[in-house]
Image (cartoon, rainbow, N blue to C red; front, top):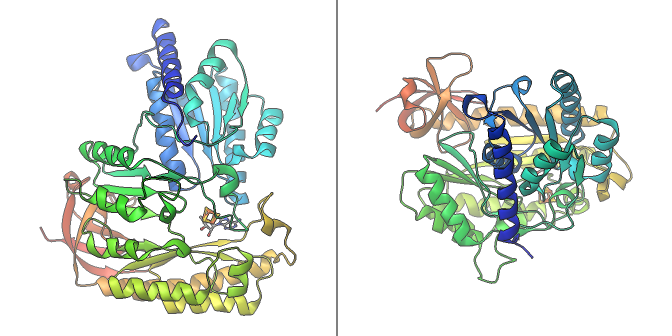
Length: 470
Ligand code: 5AD
Ligand code: SF4
């Protein structure tokens, strides 16, 4: 069953209410309410999941606190995409022991992709006795009963779902008023040979169109001005539904909603990027002129071993089609360096791909073997020194391209959404235009959360400078 029974969600919401009343009976409400702190690692999907965890924590009567030291409930939402992400999460969880020593009532729960792997949840169970529970990516909705059991019967639980479904109707506590995540589907069917995601997020399942549209309406009413539609591969949205919708239909329905807002989406697998998707980007004014289309490698031999199911030539033809439809589009990509068996020639093909496409920006990663994936068992794993050296060359080339690409905006007027102030100067605002780079300009803080017009005056590798012109 794709959707979780509403009665099961209801049971959890009742558990949340029971926890809230438990705290109320102890006089712990209002300013005396217990604190929650959510620590998130990884991708936007995890950010979105964390907003549900926060929503459930609020429903249980917890109030958000700014540091883990103030918390009575710490939730760590982990990532498993590379070893580094797992190490970081384990190290943070290790540090929380000191907080727990000072506050024996503290509940620490660990969720997300890392603990969906049995060897990781076993490790937390056996070597981190102060971790109260773990819950996999299919068990987010179970947070209230996990907390209730930890509080009332001191029960440690380590949940592994039998199957993954969609839980509608969970409360949401959003991080940023003007930016919003909206998951349209969960899971992945692609089994790229390096990737752990299909093993930790289950098979693709699409939300019902009406549920997505209703949530978009709610977000817009709540002040969202920039909505990112999320899925591991949004281009296969709807394949598991009987209605015959595809992702382009989702885009058209969301864009048709009244209001001044923008729409982004990620991620798109090149093999599933359709003409209808390209047409939607070209015709819908609310869609940001940006496509994140991960190529991973420019070498056909590597792409084949990665199980990506397209060739470099096909990918380039897609880019040509995209640019013909939306000439000024900003393109971004993910690249893996040092995949098993990658030769110097293969790597050069990736550099050639960068020169051909001229991405505005790339996210590049050194290949990290993941237990249980086919690539981890492949011969010719690449020594770290070689991967690092290739990685540096890749970055140097991309930085030069980004520099060059960003110059095209100088002198242009852009409508930007003001996101906040610059980290280094309170008087400088940071905004985002259609493209992927932040835009910095001097302006008043009351602009934050709204749109304004700027003219770009200078650009660098990672950002733009502008002056406000409204
Ligand atoms: N090693 C390195 N990078 C990886 N990615 C996914 N799995 C791995 C891995 N095992 C990268 C891919 C993907 C991005 C989200 O993370 O480039 O698109
Ligand atoms: Fe991983 Fe490939 Fe699925 Fe992306 S499409 S989540 S890289 S398996």
